[in-house]
Image (cartoon, rainbow, N blue to C red; front, top):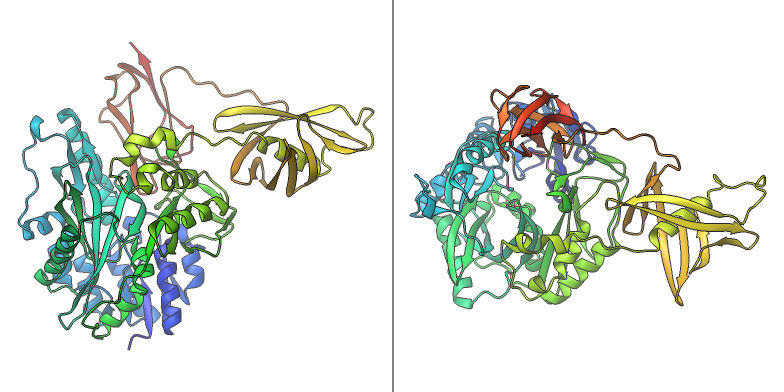
Length: 613
């Protein structure tokens, strides 16, 4: 029997594994980088072992250090979670060679399927070799790992070399393997996958289908089980193909076989030899704990001949610290508060007061709703997201709500091109005109702006805020009857709660302030000073960092005086495991290069200047 498990991962999945291990009476050991020294997964585990450094290549991708940590902490098993080394056969062998139990599939099965190129050949397919114009568009894809890292869509042949280079670098950093391949890009398919669970006695369960079509940058955003609207024959075909793939490599444990479905046909994508981020929707529908089942399989237990019966429908939304309206730019800062209604499941690696840094994936949490029908599950999840208290950096919360309520999604007609078609409409800011006034009235009640010395206590006061790139000024008065504002009745106002009545309708606003950031229900405002300081001005053609991160590369030979073409990649910036290419804004001459490779930069840092010719 397993008594102690080292979790070779971080964040949300590490916390989720700890939860199951506690229920089973199993001790847990966390590993952490220096950047994760006080991360939630290190606090909830029974023991934690430091991996010196911050970069994944120095920490979570160091198999030798992790095995050493497991032995030193007295663990008798290792669970890899997902990402990092979870699909690394050499790591699995190293765990077993150290006399530890590997909670995952056999290393040979990982080797056969973890590389997408080998998996395709095993299924009778092959990647593209020489790409020509008729092959476009194509997808450059990392051979190892997943999560959207190391993936680039190429629509022009001249963009292929840069896409290959960026994908290789991104894959090497995320998975320790820079191999990439090229395949045709299916523009309007649905991403459907089958969850499998297999034991060491030859039984393989196909635990239904999942639809993961809503994706950004080839990383899933909203997932559900079962996949809606599949013809019965296609559903059966997908499950049979998944079981066949598992038997082909003598698979054991949890895994996922992924397909693109288009025109009633299934196109094999890959087999993930690990647990998936979206596994909670399958757990909800089948009433299982897949982590507990992984542990039992690793202990040699046999599965029942048939899986449990599926019940109802489940939908999962991934909450990211990113701004979808600005090309999904990752966000950093303090997560001051995250509270989710009890009606849904919350899986997270953060808690109130935690810092969201630049080193790792920007996913804050997964929120999952289960209900008897798909429509009820969608409604429950959208409503829970609306009532979620979320104070901190910008997130994709509003995008998730709008996506769940979009007619294309509710009618199950979505494809992987959903955000390509609808992103501008989905990211249009929902404006509550009373929110800035509520923020101002709450501040007025702090007592910091008013006192008995005023000669004209009823004179109008003004307050300025920034919201979604625009500045707003609101006015109110403070007289003997209390706070007043034109067009509304102030029913109640204190520093944390304001109730306003407009046109006979009462509106309740909960207020929280952290420095200049003010949260009014789901609206985030930035309080502006009465007398703003002079702004830093940048000359035309300035390239500014769109996010905090690390400059990992400059274009070869990029110096002052270099001639560049519009759109030519100049600076590669890495943040939260993704690389972002900063191109030349115009054809011209480089008049300044302000950064060097390896330099850490903040949002708005001047990277270079290109003078338009």
